[in-house]
Length: 511
Image 1 (cartoon, rainbow, N blue to C red):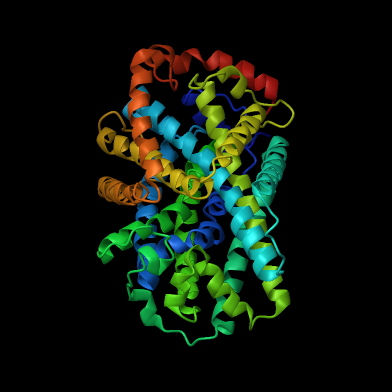
Image 2 (tube, rainbow, N blue to C red; image 1 turned 90 degrees about the vertical axis):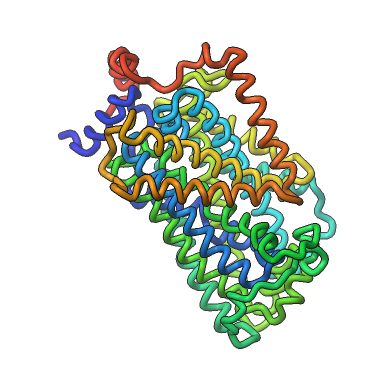
């Protein structure tokens, strides 16, 4: 007997003009776990810590996380409401197209795709530099890494990318098992880390640090923020990129809509709960980082090593076995973070390609009959991710770029929904914000505008140049011919015309 929920999911997908090609094997928890794994407070929460601390100290970290996380939650609620109405793998691209038109969707797709590729690249680069080389080898095991070169970094990243692609290649079941495990690991490791920091810290916690702002821009902060500014507010503003880079990637819940049971309910729930729990768990964690530091000025002076300054001080009093356990755990969850990012990237690429939005769309939209995975999109995504890591300054530009581009792609459909609500967008899904829909959208847009702008200042000005270039090039390409060739998502009569084709496709893949 057919599962009525599964059949309902298929019918919703058919009404949107698509066949059930991907295997729908993800539970509600799995949908939550994939976004929770990409956010991974143990990834960006550690690797990007200097961005906030070395700008305005403990207050910049704690208050910045509190404020930035709230904006991220508002964005996830607005996105969740749209996802509940349109649960497709295209996610933001599809929502932007339906609510704002083809051009809106097409622009959203390119910002989203570039941001997702940068997610995979940046996490694997950070995995090598911060967690494997910096933490595990140098800080914990005291291995001399002076002989390691860029070639070693590229080889490490390549091995990570290829193995992550292989895990994705063999279908969503294996990937889901690992991201489910990662969900539990992230929570458990974060709690253990927080407790360890309080227990083994060499200093008595001074909670006033969490609301005390100190100007560490320029030389005082080891040059993390290259130029000194006399404005504490501006320094705090620079540091907001910390939470923006960490609490991002939660559109993964939307990109796995077609693989999630009861998608209209579970996708929005997975999205906003992943953000909420990451926000709260991360808030306690970053507070513990600040409170465990022996001396804030010395930590800031360590520059990009400010986290390692704190870790080394605590590790002197910590059992070696616990230190190694935490370090290995951090390497593991960061690896799965990139794995989840690749899953999201490949599904978005597949969805954009099946609507003819990419070069070689027929190739990239291929789904394996045996694994029910978009195999060609998976391998193309890792090739692009690897190419992005070859840039000499990849460490910073990838992290900032992924945050800025993803949040730009988040807010375009949210604003489109704001203007379409009650007009062209009248039918919503079961997850609704009701009278709060428009106020939340406006607050979310304001927050994103604030957060995204932080990624445009030195040392991240290259991200600004790339954003401006995209803002110029994309409209030129659109009016030069893309608008005539690109059909976009199915709407109106095209949906009905595709029903026979949908039935034929689903015969090939089975139930």
